[in-house]
Amino acid sequence: LSLKHLSGIVYLYSKNVHDTDLAPGMQIMSCKILINIVDFINKKSEKEALYTGRDLLMRLLEVFIQKFESVAKYQLPELFVRCARQIGTDVPTSLPPETAESSGGSTSSGKKGHGTLAGGIQECRQLVGLLVRGVKAITWVINAYKLQQKHQ
Image (cartoon, rainbow, N blue to C red):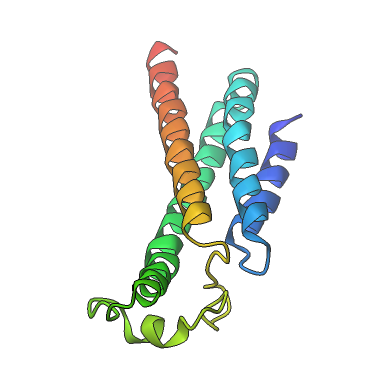
């Protein structure tokens, strides 16, 4: 595949990562695919345009960081509320009020683009683990670009 094709793949699966209408398993699978694409981008950019590959990796890094922000802002607070209700304690006061009100066992917070993981803690843990792996892989490859530029 060329970098142009890889760019299209990154665009498509990046949309899937942020699409809250998709099942959580699809978001997780899209993250896995994006992580696997990092190596292909690295290999192709050695043969083709170095800067195009780096720009594509920066876009991937941005996607993962935005997903981290989404999980931290919308999914984790709702999981805290759900867990607090299951064990019979009060909802933590540090959570935003809309999170505490909207978490009556629903799968989304009612706001377009800010749904939560329906499966709960296990899927959230898996997603966060993949995001960490992805950011780690991308930063490692971007760091290798700096070394390549010094040798040229």
